[in-house]
Structure formats: structure tokens, C-alpha cells
Image 1 (cartoon, rainbow, N blue to C red):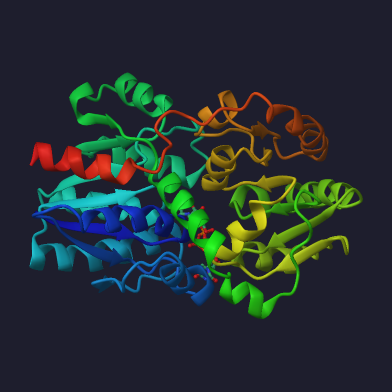
Image 2: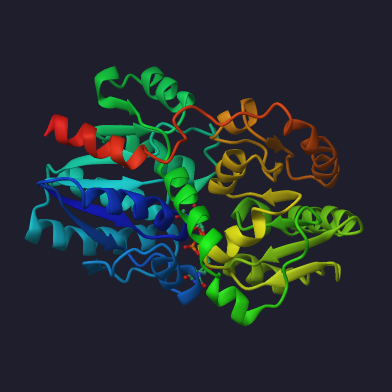
Length: 363
Ligand code: UD1
């Protein structure tokens, strides 16, 4: 079985790493990595391949940035060429970025089966580009691999046959547990070289912020910055800055307090090395909501909604909204959640093995 495993943007790389690793133990599977080039800066792309031990991709499509239409179209044109030439039996896409959408459409129109890892998640917010990517991908997916119960229920509600839906746990957590073991025994190289800080465990916060709805609107971004300047009176905040956020900070002349330490985008290990010992994590990313739940670290999500409700129901996540008041309120509340927090079912580091087991049985 020849499989194209597609990744394009930063949050994809940690998901394909365990899937690729597990594929090498499955007889009869020839898994080839396709990197669309949606993210291309060293810090946003290659650093992750090195960190996560992903081999060089077989295909690099060099799509780059652009409007959604331009980026999606560039990926589609390049991906169609290799699919026509190589005719894989299956195209596996992960998550919800533009590469996920582009490659699943191309595959399906060439009558190649599509597997979607992290299927069925819904924020019910169509102002989010990722929600459109998730929904369209799931309309044409053949094998749905689901991370939490809400994903299964959403797909059933949308009329998907139960036999195509496989609740396997979460490959993101496979990667997290694998990398956590690694950093316990090996020094985190790049971080040690370029920065000298690591505050004492439980004395600082870690924050990420990059969603267009948070940083592309001046009023929203200023309110968020105000909230964090307030929180920074309590503790140091480490803040690796995404390229989009950096651009908007300059454009809106946003100033952060001295107690908010701005860092370049970090590799996976560097980032984990810092947030795993944080007192609290603030984020608008999807993955960190789940990873903090898996390690029982308090998490405040700077969004109005989440497509990952299990992190709120069972885990350590609190939804703050994007106003200053909402963020400060959630910050006060989040520490109480840790005592009764639970790890969601099947978030045990074995999701990738389950995916291959399913695919072997249906092929
Ligand atoms: C994309 C994903 C988002 C994911 C995020 C993680 C979509 C629709 N969005 O958003 O779901 O959470 O990645 O990072 O697919 N840029 C660089 N270097 C790079 C890549 C981008 O400087 O390597 C710049 C671009 O020029 C652009 C901005 O960063 O100005 C945003 O990049 P883009 O890929 O459009 O979207 P993200 O915001 O990263």
C-alpha cells in the first residue's frame, strides 16, 4: 500500500511524526512524506523536521504564503502532478490547515482514497478558516480518525456512516509523550545555545498567540495585550512570537511589559521544555489546549470557542474569550481545574499504531 502522508504547516509536523514512525513497523506499507511548503521559514518548518526526527520529505511542493485562494491553489496544482505520476493508494491528511483541504480535494478527484486524522472536530465558527477546511475535508474523506467523542458525534450528525469512523486517540499526544521522554534524557540543544533562561518550575507563564481573529484586528489585539500586561505584574510570561503576530505587533505598535519576554518561534522540544514546567499556559492554538490537558497544566484559551471540548470537560482548559476582562477572569479560575482533571480516553501514546491497524484491516 503506497501512502502519501501530507504536511504543510507547523501544527501538522508533530502529527505526521508518530504516524510515519509507526508506518515503518507495518509490513506492506510504503509511506512517503509530502511537504507542501505552506510553512517554509527554518523556525516554522525545518527545525520541526529535525526536532521531531521526521526524514526529509520525498516531495517538497514549495507552495509558500499567499491569500487563502492562492496558497490552496498552488498546493493543489503541485500535488495533482505527483498524484497523477505516482498514483498512491491512499492520501493521508492531518488537522485543518490549507494543505489538508487542498490535498484531500486533489486526491478525491483522482479517485484516490482519503484518510483524515483529527476528523470531526467542529468549532461551529465559519469565520475560522480552519473550520471550513475541516468541514470540506470531512465531506470527501473515506477513513475518519477521531481524537475525542465530540468528533464521532459531529460526524454521525453530519450523516457519515459509523463504520467509516474510527476513534483511535490522538497522534499529537503520541508525539508529546515520545518527545517528553526524549527531553528528559537529552539536552535541548538549540535552546541552550541561544537563550540562557529557564525560570524555576511553576513560577512563570508560557503564551502563544497567532490566530488572525486575535492579532489582525487592532482593538482585539490591544485588549489582549492589556490583559497580559496586567498578568505580567504577577509573573514572568515567556512568549515565542509567530511571524504573523510579529508583523501585526509592529503595524499596530503594540507594546508588551518588560516582564513579557519575547522569543523567536521555538522548535517543538524547546517549546515543550519551557511550557511543561509553566504555572499556566495561555494560547489560541488548537494543539496546546490538548497537550496541556495531557500533562495537566492549567490552560487559558484566548478564543470564543473551541473545537476540542474534551479539554474543557475533562481536562485543564478554560475558555477565556478575547476581551481583557474575560482573560483575567479565566486566569483566576484556571488553577482550580487541575485537581479533578482527567486524561481523555485513548490519549495514551498509541494512536498511530491504531490508525495503521485499521488501514491494514480495510485494505
Ligand atoms: C497556519 C494555519 C493555522 C495554524 C498556523 C500555525 C491555515 C488556514 N492556517 O496559519 O491553522 O494554526 O498555520 O502556525 O492553514 N510566514 C512566515 N514564515 C513561514 C510561514 C508563514 O513568515 O514559514 C508568514 C506569512 O508570510 C504570513 C503569516 O506568516 O504573513 C501567516 O502564515 P500562513 O501560513 O498564511 O498562516 P498561519 O497564520 O501560519
